[in-house]
Image (cartoon, rainbow, N blue to C red; front, side):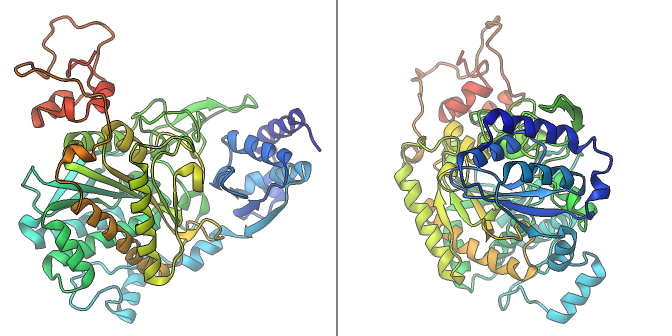
Length: 531
């Protein structure tokens, strides 16, 4: 059995060699592959974790106590030296996918307007429940971000005052991050459920499910003649629903530039400018992009993320370094926990409903029993549709630990009552991972909507006292007449706001310094007199 020092030496040699060995590509067969590695002892696990922590490899399933195996995408340039690693460590493995480019073509097929038109003529309105309006897009297909935005505009135009197009900010490349608020958007007193999708670029299934939810909610407001419509309509009588089908449009659009190529199709991060860093071997490299779901200020950089810019889980220079995560933060804080009572983020893949917190298997919010109960009911509802088997738990309990996630931040810092991350089809043991057969897109969306309906019902039936649903925070008593805004002429040098929007948030909602105190201590310490 190899010692830890021996394993580290193997890894350093491997990392140094991957991009320096001239014959690496020539010795491979030129195909992108997916390997499953199944460690059987401590030495194997140590070697696998060293490989993961190097930041050089795209792990589709990370090594952890909850995962008995790990899955890695290997490029042609990496294959020769990766085999050296396998030979040296003797970790049992199997090749799940021999040719990822071929798999992409088989499952997702040609992606041009002619082929989509022919499929539409051949299948008709295969996505539509009788009487439903398609708003110009058929479900069960993937679309560009521009097509999605145009689709959203048509929905808003058709619904009038029952829907409002909302932009929460711009991306690195200047795209606006759009969503639709359904219900009575003009009424600022109504509570809101937030649903977003596509924070990871390659998770197309999540983006499609977000689009499908727009489609079903819009038809619920237009027709309301199906059971699912009636559930949504009941929720919307008292609450609003805010849906963002793609919160990382730059990354998503990049994956569409050459979707037939694995290196493009499986891009995970946003498209931020290059940042340079050093490998453990000492090599200096520069790479683009930040993993947005490691960029939130929840135990930032404490684990399950990487400091290396070329890693798929690079957390960025600091929390909220990215315009996309800042946009979500600002929109959430503007609503605050009194209005925003649920925050749900859609991902793919693994078939999981994840409740907080994901940084440590022993760390839970005070209302964990209630969150577990709701997750269980949602999982049962999902399974009743087609028999799809989901699991529920915190990240470390059922998949892996990580920090900097949006749903955890929304719970711990903002105090939103219900926060969940939902990982859609396929199961985490599936070999096709991010490349879901198109025939599964609509069933995936429909079963997810059934689980979501259970969550919406919980929001609608919650305690009428909104303070009873907010996660406990150290709220300071502020006497009548005392300003919530700092009026000191010379505040201490260390008392500064981190967010540039503090004054606009306070103007929009004067009680935000109390309602979301934990978040405002971090973001608006000066403006809220919380130094």
